[in-house]
Image 1: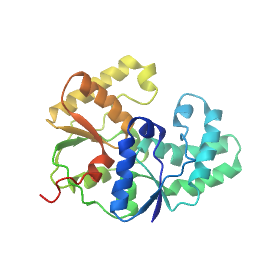
Image 2: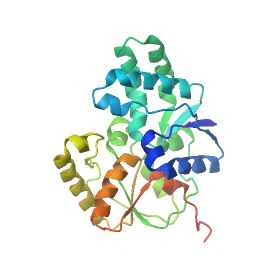
Image 3: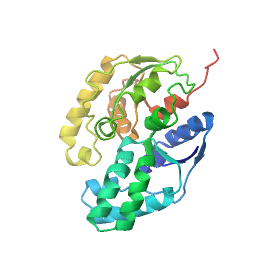
Image 4: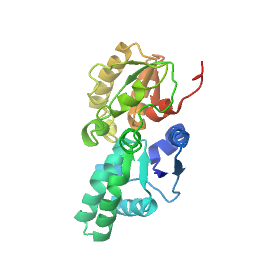
Length: 246
């Protein structure tokens, strides 16, 4: 299958290893992965902060960049949700019939990583090996917008060597929410403190999630307390194979 990687601007700028992991994982599974160089921000930041007209050309460019691919994969549930749920609505709001039609055609082909692996490619055991104690945080967009359910957990349970432990109150928000963390820093900080406390209670070595934005936020809290708990995107754990033959 010819798959296009939508890496997202945050991942490309701050966590490029996640994008590389997605490519390594899918190529290991026998698929060709392209990186359309014309790709850009999905416009989520603009939409969330009230700059709706400015998000429109970003949606147009996204539709042009990824037209023609059988599948588009992204290591971000929030950006997948933006493309699938909001590009069509944005186009309709501003009367852009051509964009609305293009977004309608493209939306079903845009997948968060766990959706692509489980639903489209039909795999849960990807041949990964990660001998660490891991807990998983289901991000708000993956949980409530995309409704990925237990797909990430099914993938993690199949990883060899992993000790997967349940996160208390896993479904509570970490407090990031994009610009929410800036505009409501006190509330965001309180939510983060709760999430960090629950992560520490697991006794885990690594916190896993499917959105680098949330990992950045929680990872900052863990780091400032010198907990020794690391963060890894789901793609990085699934791409890991070192020592698998031992």
